[in-house]
Length: 454
Ligand SMILES: Cc1ncc(COP(=O)(O)O)c(C=O)c1O
Image 1 (tube, rainbow, N blue to C red):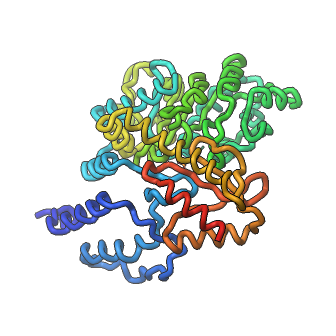
Image 2 (cartoon, rainbow, N blue to C red):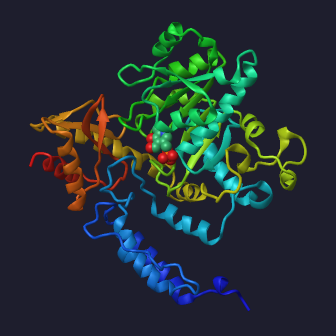
Image 3 (cartoon, rainbow, N blue to C red):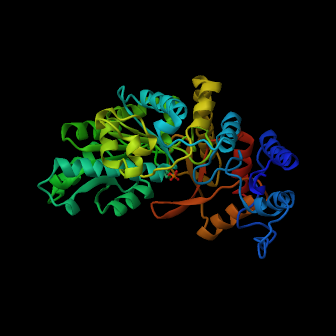
């Protein structure tokens, strides 16, 4: 007889599919996070010896817990960096879940690996990286940055054996994503913090910082961003990348958010990614895949495998033969071992909708940001803080205090109009609109801007 946890319950399975169908059919309701008008339910006594009826707990989830979660995939979610998974990517995520699809090794999952690799190769080619570039899908930008910088550090150590490991540094901009600082902290590497030029990290600024530094030789790598999170600014990838090439430095490009602009009319701004030793872009951001998914791509994946592959007696079967000719195990290219086939929903979506659909969907957000910027400039009482950067717009309500920005943000959510959170720009609190979902409308933008004038 089957163990009860492994027996098939047709009625409950249908309830789950019904719930999922409903979510797929309609725009995600914005819902509430911590600002829900009703209190969080108690979970006391929920876990029992004998378990509870799954249909009741699904209802409890739908009616109670889910109400306290803002839907990141709603076209009204314009905070942080939203997530807008395509229908096919969500459906295929269910396939990955229900098939328990493991994407750890070639031995176990060659069929998954070739599909994931096709998606990675496609992204690498778009980014202008050479044939043979590759890596793995990891859980997110933070984890992709950490793995990439680990390889960069280890390569730097071998290039500079004359310098104590703890003295090696990476040059980063003050506007780099917080995960870069955190990765360097984990790696025990100090940053050479370069003051950017109007928030853009350029070769000229780097050269100035190195000239003023007492130990420029300790810099082993450069981290650039193709689309800063706060303002969508693309660093001087061409200048920084060619500097890195000329000086044998590791060049990492964090395109977690803005790497997707490779599919837009801003593509030329990103052409310097072709110099990258490592590059990340998150399908779970602006490439319309479900959480959690980051494409981590190395120019020379063999190097990454050399430093990151886990070795153990029980894993030897994955690594037989000559290191240069190992089979392709996604587990070898990042700080992880077991992994779900998280790249497959993105692959399935890309293959089924085609590249043109990705280009048009990405462009929608950029065009909307430009129109929003024009509307702000034409509205008395509002000021555009700077030109739209990719799909991000920063604006100021003249005269507002920080408390007013926070109250406005809460009220928009309370009224289920939009989720918009303020940010800090050069010390000042301002409003920030991060467009991403292709179904976000000009009417919504107008409503949000009008709400700042009330
Ligand atoms: C430029 C950039 N890098 C890294 C990250 C971190 O990505 P994740 O949240 O997937 O860890 C973000 C997140 O917004 C980002 O915008």
